[in-house]
Image (cartoon, chains in turn orange, purple, yellow, brown):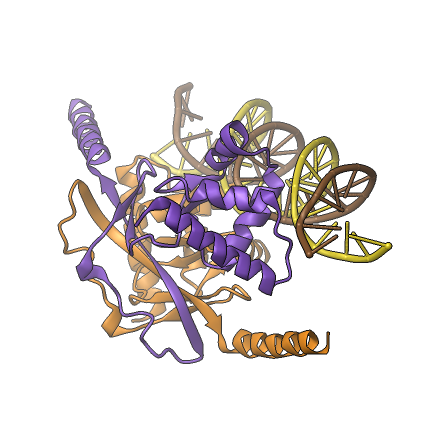
Length: 163
Length: 163
DNA sequence: ATGTATGCAAACCATTTGCAATGAC
DNA sequence: GTCATTGCAAATGGTTTGCATACAT
């Protein structure tokens, strides 16, 4: 779908949400939403802050945190917290269902689409719980790290022999 | 399986790991492992620290963090980072496959076992990636929060009418 | 004997908060 | 005009780090 059309839709959705919650429709909030939907893939708080303040619209970190929370609440943004200290975010609307491959060695995150791994979570009746969405993270090692690790292990074994 | 038997096994596994990595086998490390495998379910850093220092073995926070990382590396402990500021941990050995129900409202985490939701992640061939384990989080609202939220919404609508 | 691991306190750093100024309504 | 929102800077708090001491090897 066209990027601009998606932007219009999410903008409208955000407006509806803000109205329903009786929150103000500030230019900062729309600038943040627009920035997020101008890119594809994951982004960090820092990257978003840099982009907004360099090219787009002067906004403080506090406001970005505040707005991101609103966007998470109305399901226009997804937040990931994986190992590292800081969080990663991605847009949620018109973003095909996908999972995340996380390298336990270098921390790199890759999207992973697989029709076979669509999980019937949301259709299931769970006792005392109303499911709304899910996140699946697959941990392992990326090829680069795997190669490096193998070399390391080989070296380490050699050392042991010498001793 | 018997708790003590499991403790013996994980102790042995930990010993093997420490030997392979040429790390010292300190009493602190074994005390931490023992504490973790003395309980069931999730635990926080604080709870572990409190338990160890009150009933078990005087250990500093720094050492617990250090040891927990070793235990994660050798797959005896799993770490979860969900929404809240702090992490949650659980033992990994002899812990039946289960997923996690996370209430987006109160943050409460519940284990969820379902044979239907066993995912053939680890058998799959993924390009340029060697999968090792996965984590599935199902987000939604627990019954308590759902009831509370419904009441709130009803109240809010009433207010709107009055205005 | 050697150098890794511990404990302590300080440092770190992503995120949150308090408050005065701004601006959406 | 009112009060939610912003920006700033300070606070917070979980986690990490530096360093002297202890102790596993």
